[in-house]
Length: 92
Image (cartoon, rainbow, N blue to C red):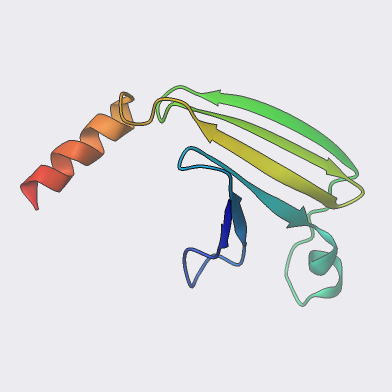
């Protein structure tokens, strides 16, 4: 397990369980007190997706603005997007 913040533009820290599975937290409260031109707040939110194109499952749960997103990539290398990425890497 390791914690990382992958990009400068991404404000989230990710907890990686393996190369295929990670989790990160979600906090909607900052939007209510920030200087934004929109407000998005989830009272209760449960979301599940089987993303066939990239070969991954995603579960997101939020209660009163605090929650998490769990992602498991079961077959990225065999997916359409994974094959395109490998082809792209070969041309570089």
